[in-house]
Length: 414
Image (cartoon, rainbow, N blue to C red; front, side, top):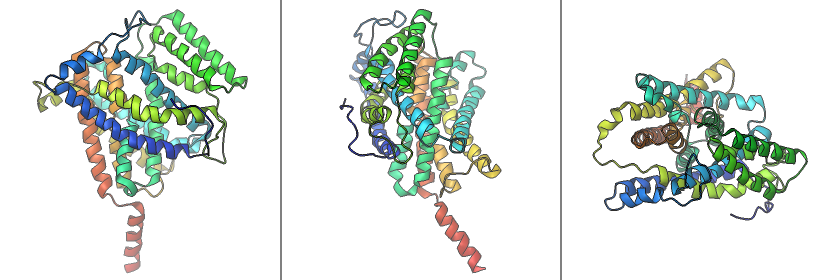
């Protein structure tokens, strides 16, 4: 990991985020395709699945047993991903686009509706199957890397305001996903470990209040925090978010960020590792599903169908409808210079739920490999359909400026 030295110049954290996530999205797509090939290539598939379950040790938690390659990726590396998510959430709420209620209105409403509607679609499909109800949150989250990657490919056909809107919605969406994981996908609790973890978090907040800005101190405590959260029964990735909330931030209202701010320094250092190593590794380890003996008919099964409809229909309806209602009622204005067809296209792209949907699916049906494979099929199908439809709409949707010029021309011609 690069040294956490002060930035040579103040840079826009948002611009860096959009750039790295766009490129990272392409790498993630490649990792997912590679995983599918590996899982279905004769002679390679067995080695692929064997690799993921190699026991490496040690036994950190009796509940999980010896650590495996899959556990290191999903519980340890992804804790770093969630650390970055937590840093982005804190920055936006303290010193970013979500720092005031006026700025929070639209993304918060859109994200809430964009999580509730997919969950509703899922439950409508699996309502008669009690065993499957626990997966209601699988289609609720958006994969920002994939979505921003596609927006980057579209270039100027998607105005900057739409990219910022989607990014902000995804950040609020991630916050909701973290809360859902903590509340609904937690195993039996080890109260001693949980108490120690709480004491560590309290200590980290106390260091923040005391003015300690040395990142190495917080990172060391974050590693210890991860161990006890992992042992406690709460999913270990929550440790990343908790640690992020304790990292000191220096407000910079007149600049994109502050070169001496610990939070900004850590965020910039983690971005490339998250975008190009951690998330692609997660995609490679979790997207592989054997399709041997399967057909398109598997998508009609309750679980894949529920996930597919939740991502494709639930996301677009929830986000687009909430933006329309907010704009028409005056509660919040739609993104500047974005036409309604473009907003609809972005609402479709929000149905790409790859990383977080696979992650929650693994938690919801832990130990049930057949159901997890069905989740993967539904996630892949719903994400691909959302990506294709969203790209097509945005590729041909007229910009708001163009519509305004045409409307003016029509009025002038009367």
